Image (cartoon, rainbow, N blue to C red; front, side):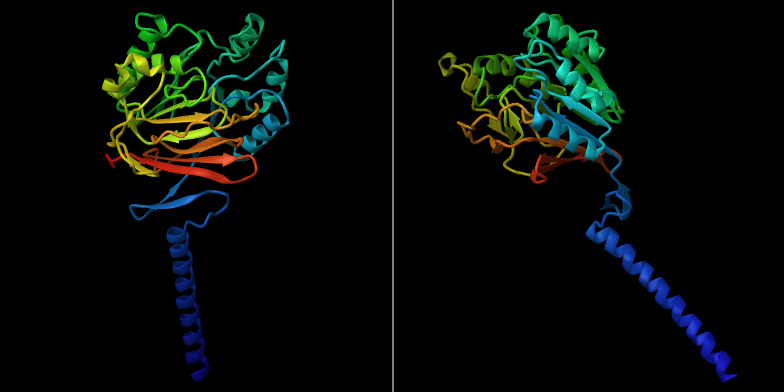
Length: 333
């Protein structure tokens, strides 16, 4: 009798210990975000959410060892989509080096046209044919994100075909209930801190308010060869009226929050990601509307989380550091 009693007691104790162990492991996974089997989990509304989708953004590639390192690091991330911000070549007679080096990510790429891509007719034809572009500007969707690839190297002024396309496309996307995020990728920035400031002024005079009207969340550019991210900013109409400013900019900062934003936050975040491989520029200006400016090689990784309702963005350097991070949450959830 005693032997049977002790055996039953031992079995019951083992069951209790097993359940307790499983409970502790579960709580650790949820609360401390421990990765399991290579997948990332987050606690959201008391459920486990898997990060399934990754979008890489970067430009100013060139064709050298640093470019190769960037591409290898991108491949290690195994993203679903790679959006570029132009200048895949520079000072070359052909695009063949870029085409060969980028072959492993070609099928995931959606490119934007840069000034060096459009500089010579033969190179431009090689690039657009290789990436099957019918026009130098276009839109595309991935999951619940709408993208516009804008060409700052082709006519974009009011009345141009590109301007009409962008306006109509944004209007349609803003009314699409399946779209939660809108991202523009292009070459030249609307808020340049180095090159082509007059072009930047023209771009923001035409497009900043349009982008804001239709709910654009991120505008990602390059041309200046470093990384920078703005606060959410609004177009400063009074400042821009002064024709003596000669390309200077002073946007209105909508919030001084540095890392976490809701979809109701007013203003657009502008990023420069000219960090894929071409020689980095020295940062000469540090305006107050930029959260961060760093001259390091790497790329922006945009992760779709919480069934696409959260964008978690990180800038990864080619030597393995996370240089910057910020998050946008859809406040409709």
